[in-house]
Length: 155
Ligand SMILES: [Zn+2]
Ligand SMILES: [Zn+2]
Image (cartoon, rainbow, N blue to C red; front, side, top):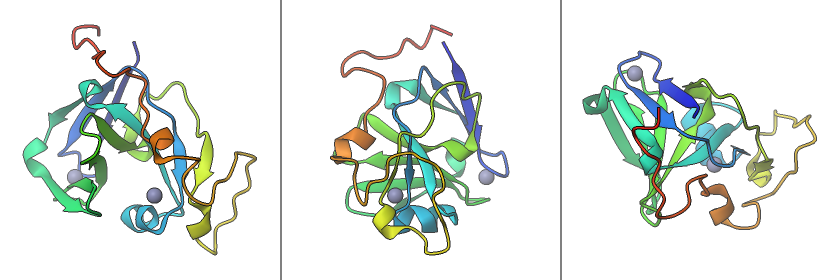
């Protein structure tokens, strides 16, 4: 089983992910661009059973970026960490930029290209969607089937 870890810029907060990442998307929406200060956010979804904080949990701050979504970040260095969703309590959104040990997976598509930065040109051949890639659920999928938790003892 793969072992993926991640940490914030100041390294106060660290975490690990067990098992495989869900589908990966490059999100060009204006909120992701602002949160990351970047052309787009490369993100995936994991099941809460796959995720654990290793250090610095007391150093987290949160921001409700919409009625449904809460963003977690390091209160010392500001690094974006995870997102939680009121309507999907078993799912966490994770940006790939802070991860180490990702061995498989690549972005499936660019999404919300309707909000893409004017100064950024997409030069790869991945599919592009102006908004969601069909439905929001496609973005929030994980590799864990509902009711089947990843065994914490497997690694
Ligand atoms: Zn930090
Ligand atoms: Zn976005």
